[in-house]
Length: 305
Image (cartoon, one colour):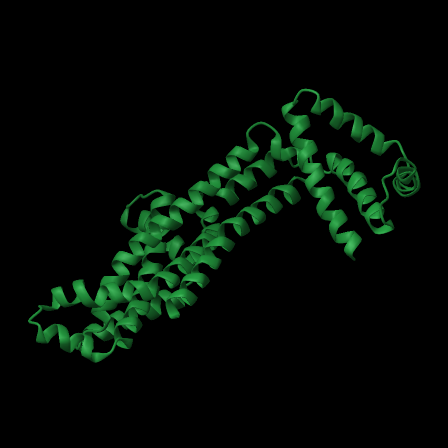
């Protein structure tokens, strides 16, 4: 298991490096990469293993059998990857297009979260109102947004408004509207919970000092609420980034849509394109969301203590 895992990982990294060198034709290194591929393809794996295990010790380089087996798999897999379709990532500007699509995804998410935090804070304050009608209406809005799938909301905003009210808006604008509505509901409920969890003497002390409601919330309540909400708001960013994969269905050219375009243009010439493109997109989503999730967890633990 150890040999298979490290051999597979090493093969992927070596194959990626060799593909980059060959694609960009880096002087000297390109010739070395080509020679490595031809050597690996035209010599048996068993002979390569014997060379590593029995040959190298004769010149003072001693390797364990596990290391030799792992290196053999790495050398074999690295050259085999050149025929697996990985080169599609480096054809033309495919990799740059994928990164640009990822930028669209992140941009939509960040803008939606910023708007959600602003409107959600106001929404949360309204949800603490003493009026039963206001509390009922805000609760109705919250439950409607929670129950309704984001994809249905996207279709309603993008297709429904254009068809029934002749309101034509771009796909990006539709996504931001829907994500802001969703984020406002989620953030509003978090703000409401944070406000109601504050000790009553916070409100009473502010009122005793003669502060108006606006001054009370601005100087005392909201700063405490935002500190408690920041980890949840950061976590909402990751949820929105992952949910942006749905916007491909309304034609927004983000990272998933770019991936589909590359796959469609190389489907016949490189049958394994979908494996490499979707695998790359998966890694990019993980690379973006994992640090954000860890930051949210760190802030939550830090401020809790």
